[in-house]
Image 1: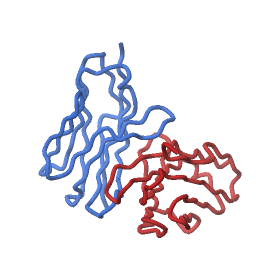
Image 2: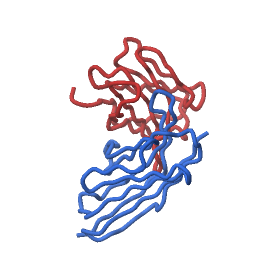
Image 3: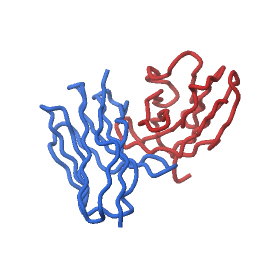
Image 4: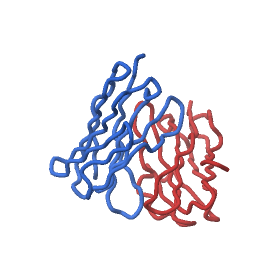
Amino acid sequence: GENVEQHPSTLSVQEGDSAVIKCTYSDSASNYFPWYKQELGKRPQLIIDIRSNVGEKKDQRIAVTLNKTAKHFSLHITETQPEDSAVYFCAASMNTGFQKLVFGTGTRLLVSP
Amino acid sequence: GAGVSQTPSNKVTEKGKYVELRCDPISGHTALYWYRQSLGQGPEFLIYFQGTGAADDSGLPNDRFFAVRPEGSVSTLKIQRTERGDSAVYLCASSFSTAGELFFGEGSRLTVL
């Protein structure tokens, strides 16, 4: 089955810096890659996603890139703010017609003022 | 309601007991998922409902776990003969369509003593 690895497990940056989180997946049939943000004790919330027919997608300060050949995808956050502090999860899903997501183990991002 | 509602938010039980966890999805969402999140890990897929039927229950760990959605709306996850290893946050999510964005609830934290 699919396996998703995520790095780093923790990431500390200064406010205004950029943050990059990387994930690799094992199953070349995976074609949908969402990213979720989870604040402490809260629900995971979708922040951006990308499908395998697209190499890059951007939404304001957040961007995701996908390299299908290398089977890895990355989350980029620019101009980080303290409210970006949370745990971020990447996930992968095959074209099953529904969202049977396999999640990474998460990255705890801390943005210091 | 405005979001996915899960009850109870916290449940403490003793090993061997039976528990039920309830999920009330967003009105009009036909797809419903259960995921389980252990401490420090990403959510893990358990089961997917489309309407009243369980379309994929391949993530249920064993036959102590069962879920129903009799009227295509509210779902109940049932765990028999609970074990300490069942302790986790059980997340419910719903989406408007099978491949649509997942909206997660706040989760039910289960602790088995």
